[in-house]
Length: 277
Ligand code: NDP
Image: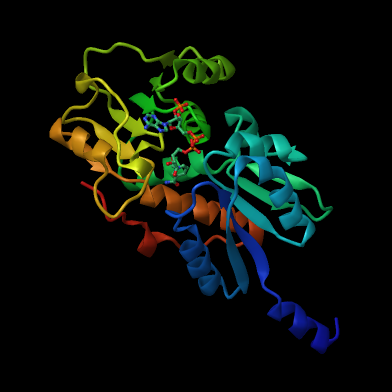
């Protein structure tokens, strides 16, 4: 390639971004920009708050316009998988995708790296998933990703509780694994209580039995926030150790960055969440 053309190509930023609704809370842009600076890549990371009726057309337009990749957040993870031409195994298992990537041939591929990010942060916290008894609050796209990852990591059992019970039943039926139960009654506190609902975004706490959390419990809220969330506060009152989802966000952003640019960012200095009890 002649030097003039190469210089022009290097000046053109790689277009990536995030699609979801609402998106006012997202901190994905700052992470991707930090990773890009570290890797010496010129990117333009756009935030696309999109209403349900426009989701497919906005995504197609982004990729037809040369976009490299999109992170997908609530409430579109199931739709992202349905829209894609190809999908990675984790996305197929979860029935939900949080990353879309334009392949060389122009097709769109769906992946789910939520589970990878979640396990990565649990490892950072020194929590052993193998053999653990877990309760997951929520049955949306994020819940599907983290439950699948924990099943792969040899969790002992996962009890799923959702505000609308039918959605939890649908998820459990699709996973078809004897370790998955719906709102199982329990006598002892869980080893891990996960808030995979979006309730914290509206300052509320999803319903869970008092006995679900105790001093031996790690209570993990997927939402990240400047202050402890109502879920974290309630779990802390029961003596649980608490953590928000910042470390997971960093780890799944790094995994997305790798899918789009082929470079694994160094994340250690970014990983410690402000809300880790
Ligand atoms: P979805 O929209 O797919 O699902 C939302 C879930 O939250 C549903 O189970 C819904 O229940 C439940 N819910 C919403 N409001 C309430 C409420 N007031 N009380 C109880 N339950 C409620 O979203 P996602 O699964 O994609 O995302 C869930 C959350 O996880 C989001 O807040 C997102 O920001 C966060 N997340 C964080 C990540 C990170 O890296 N830290 C990664 C992925 C997600 P119902 O079905 O009954 O409506």
